[in-house]
Length: 251
Image (cartoon, rainbow, N blue to C red; front, side, top):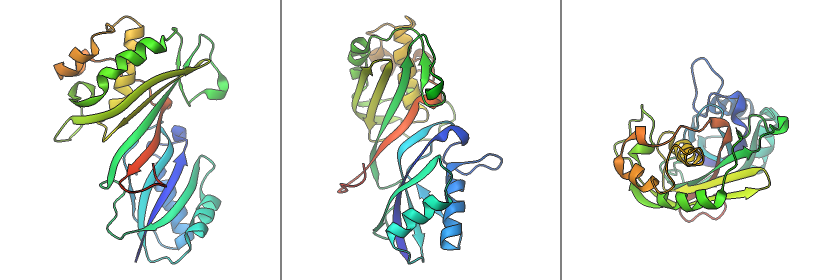
């Protein structure tokens, strides 16, 4: 029995998220269908995390325990022959049998993309958040530093989460601009349900004057979801990197 670490990327627009759903297409189910065609058996896939409907991934890691003896390069080529064009297998390698894509993950990086222009762009539709009011990236970058460090992020977690602890450590949060594209990049040891989207929504509420620029520390300490900003829409969010201890080729 082998344990394969598979890295994929996908455009999440057509999917209900990563996890298999009863009545909606998911990335996991689509990948399982492709693996079944290639391996001639329906294998269980362990994903590194859940992603919501409409969320994308520049890097998503999962592991598959299988009896298949197909070489890793053949697995990548074979899967891409069966996968739809909005999902791509990037790499495959054999790992220790007890490796677990979710539980062995030590951190992730997300990127949120905003098109900051009064004019929409049909070529980025579904791949960013169209936000018309001008964003002062220097101001928001300064505000975002309040997120960094170890905090209880209960105020940045949507209802319905079942986690025991809402304490997370944010390594960095940056806000940058390239022409009409504003990019928010955040890395942490873990993320709560909708945490990144609420962090982004809180920063955009600063732009709209709904939250004061110096108010984010008090929002964090309040532990009150009603004090933080809106939940930014899913189409701007990308899982960008996945980190594993001692691994140079993942993350």
